Length: 394
Ligand code: SAH
Image 1: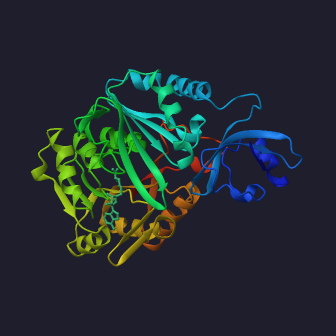
Image 2: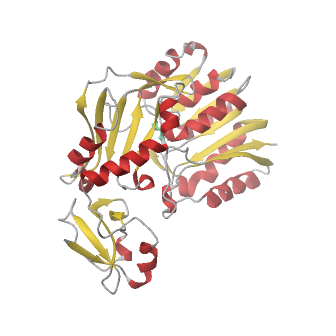
Image 3: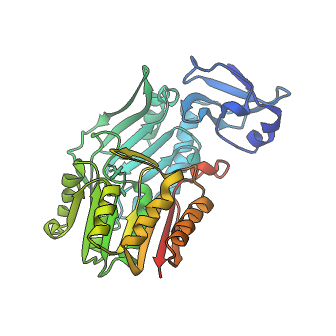
């Protein structure tokens, strides 16, 4: 058994349940050849603190799984975590209006490095390190006995043999006839579990889409930037928006957005879908003096395109400033970031800077974080990564 020693000043933090094996928090250990092995974490006096597995993922070398010395990490362990997680989501399984949600959320449900999503009868397992992938058979075997399903898919989001791959694979059951159509608050969404890293929808924005649809879009013109498959536009239209413009750089966005609209019987010919760099689009839209009642900003944490690099931690103020120019008075900006290194306070400070620099007034009307199915580990604040702010320009 590998033994890792905590640095004295971090003993308490680990004992209180901090789940991530951060290299700076422990004495130096070479774990490069130990992916998937179990270890014991000991305090500086060599007393047991917790046990976990080695799995390199972003800033961590592994995850702690149990603080009980006599608890084994085995089939039974995985099964018990899955039972607790499934029981927490009973209401989701009963809701006929929403058939896609997260069933298991990594460290928030007790196993860092693993998520499980449900998409209308299909389960998608995402493994975030080679280490956790070594437990795949046990994980899937235990889980599959607890649920009814059509099929199971997996995504491996880690470095394999030196190069980063984002592979996806059918695992068992029936293969899906993609795209499959799931429902979210009564709206149809086309999903593909077998087409690269993304499925067509980001489930963590469910509550935001619902609010946009039910409360803020009726009769409004809406600009949806970084629109991907246009799901925010679809919800705005279902809520009565009079016009949407969806802007994304990726060519695939056009057909994917048409598809999401078509399956909801939306006449996409009277909507606008623009394939363009958002930063170029902003310049053009300003020249053309375009304005909207609502501007949605949901950029990736980092984006690189011809002539522009965007980092949400550094450049979000500029993005808001662009949005201010295109937003009508009394209109709304919906600003979102999923960058875990940007705190909510910092995000709001960037919003404030943008309005001050533009000499415009605003009021924050609503704020959102992760929905309930994205269980958060309160010992690891970065796991609570989503920040969405509805800002009214006045
Ligand atoms: N808002 C979307 C998710 C966005 S994913 C949703 O709710 O579903 C990020 C998207 O940003 C990707 O589709 C990517 O193609 C797009 N993107 C990245 N950089 C861009 C840029 N400079 N201009 C326009 N789109 C960009």
